[in-house]
Image (cartoon, rainbow, N blue to C red):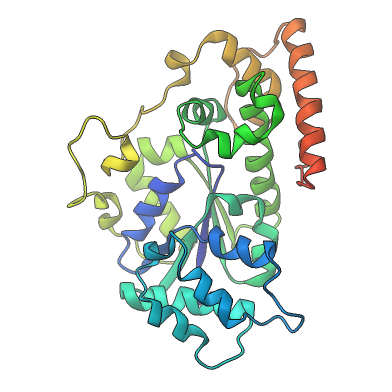
Length: 315
């Protein structure tokens, strides 16, 4: 049964809010992000030819700064390999199962935004797992990215960020959300479901009921009360840190985004805005803006290909 569901979406799209909502369901537990486990295994070549996880990897992961987020003791974590040789897949399955036992819930999923571009790979590993893709208007994603203290570790890694962070973010959003949509829709409606962030925050009960129908679990109003007992009345904290309840209007590109930024964003990713159902403010950008954005797109594409990053068909 587990992993039961993956919650994916471009970073800064509201995936943490979705995680908290689904995790509040009495039958479903959503693990913290797991890229620090999956990426390290692949990056450092820990998998031996037979595909088993060595003991020193498990010990190293238990020392990682994110390990405490799982709520496991080191003994519990290392016991996942107590039987000796264990495959990569069995090790990950054991993590999900242990997390479910710790939370007292039968169904366990994961929220890792980076997995939005790995839907096909995850489906190959877990053919019965479901995918929920949260899509947010890219212009509001851009506003969030520009205020994000980790932007340089993500979008800022592209050389074009220094010249034009807005157009770079537009292309970054289009690539990530486009890959998630393309690869998710290929799975069919039984395994893949899309939610618009704007609908989730404006009609939460209705959207959560639809999500539960997709997941095959009864809707529970506890999903809307995820913040109770955790909210912090500190105006210096953002919505995520303060554990605020579902709050519409935290970002509004129409009033908060300069018109020149809107035009460049739409020139870079307007076709995907159309595909995702978000009307443009500038359906016909100026020739000067189009020339500028075309050059940024070429540089961005060259960098993506140099990193061997996939690009969606909508590119």
